[in-house]
Length: 534
Image 1 (spheres, rainbow, N blue to C red):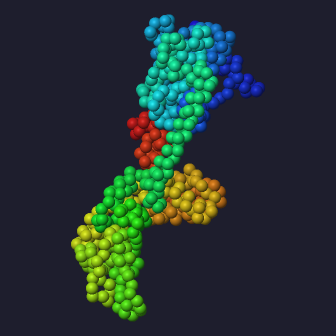
Image 2 (image 1 turned 90 degrees about the horizontal axis):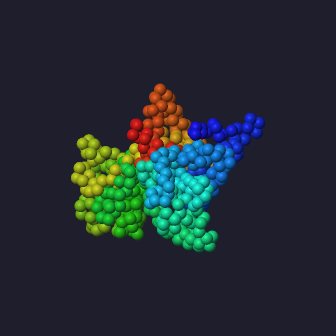
Image 3 (image 1 turned 90 degrees about the vertical axis):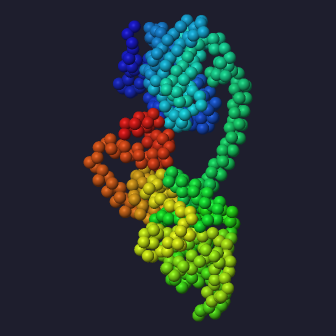
């Protein structure tokens, strides 16, 4: 028999444009829409319910196809590989290595190897690697088709599946009585169990799922609290995860900490996290910007003064060292202090005592010192602007926060966090970013780091009069940055542009290849192939 091709079976009416397959009207669909349907079914009914629906659908489709084929094309219907050939013509899967026996022995009646299964591809895209085989409509189709053809119950089960991590998909078909007890757990998916049994099973599974959802919701809420404890600093990038991990361990001990990094990266936020997660988290946290005071004012601010110590000192005044007793004193911009003030700070760190201005006696203080600077203190020491002994006293533990441009995976999550805050504070209608706006945020260099990003998002939320922030709502410097990038890249090859885009997407996904594949709109296998090629 000459093998039929799609053009032999597919017809288009020139007037109505109705498409027919074997003289039956068909509708054009795509694997993505089927994948989305599968996703919705699983999310609503769980895997058990979705498998039930899709397997029955496949069985009915296979049975009806065989019935139609017998009347329209008997030769193809009676051919050994008729059903498998239709599988390929429908674009469902590519079937190879087909073998068939009489079905009376212990060997499978039909054994097929499947390649390019759309079901496995879509399940991987939406849910990742599964614990069991996922080609439910394909096994249902084969079961329905062969059962009609042989007028005897034939059931196919998947023995291997790409969707659960195998190299290829493989299914075996046997007469019902040849499967033994193995088939009993699969019969409900073909509608061969009683309705009451199915309803009872579904009810039980839905109840279990609801309980699991409650547990998951509590876990996610706890995780979200842990993720937002940094009050605006979203930790997605590997670089920031390492910093926070070290900060968590630092919080357990009462050692002085030096936090370094560019202006605006979130040094005070990290200092507050260390304080909040320490054993003294219920004690005061007091922050002082050392660069905002003159030397005299800074001294009185830090150490306090007695009544009459100087003109205007009308009463005793506690300094922040005393105010922070038992808690944390955050000395921001420590690199801006004078050498004279550095000597006094050194004495406090060594003796753990302070002396108010105008007072002779010393007062013991117990306070954790966290200092921060955007300067390179080793360079300041070489230049004679900072004391080396104080540096080592402050730098028992050093935490360096990377700049925002070095942790691209944090940019969009931070932007969404700030947008949510801005929408709440300013009653803005904006709830998200257009793809062009998101790309602009990713392309910009962010010299002002997280503080600049926050200001940009608040500005955009204030100006936006729709639900989506567009590129036009962003400051001109962000739009110019992307225009510059586009212009300079204009002569690059498509291969290089693809490579760079995949790299940026991987950074955005925090290195998660499955998430990156979803963002790129390609299958996981395709992403791996492109990574290998690049």
